[in-house]
Length: 129
View 1 (tube, one colour):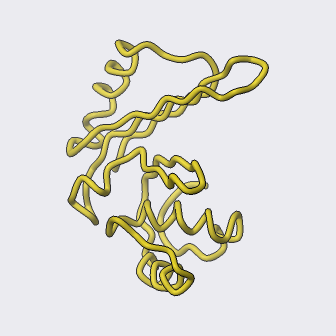
View 2 (cartoon, rainbow, N blue to C red):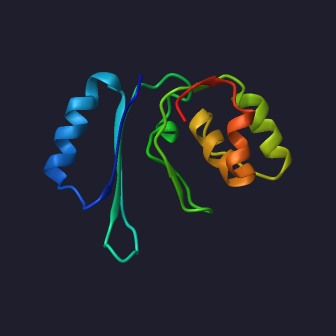
């Protein structure tokens, strides 16, 4: 199981990020990552995504998270397994989408970009919504 952390509001310090990642390391010893982004709104909010990875499917660094779909400016941290990722991947590839990894996380990103919320009805796996 991977370790996930998300926060919306004020930014957290690098020291706080390191404490969170250290606390999550037991859930994901293979890699860790972070993404901080300023949300251009009235309240000067930030989004913080932290992830510790237990690599199961794509063992390469291309499967590390947080993962981005730069075309749509989507970021994702995910824990679970999409059992039908290969079928979804093939369907998305027929629509012209190119994948960089063999990760089901990337299938989720491109699937959401392509189908929007209809993606959730297409998934077979173990995950939280």
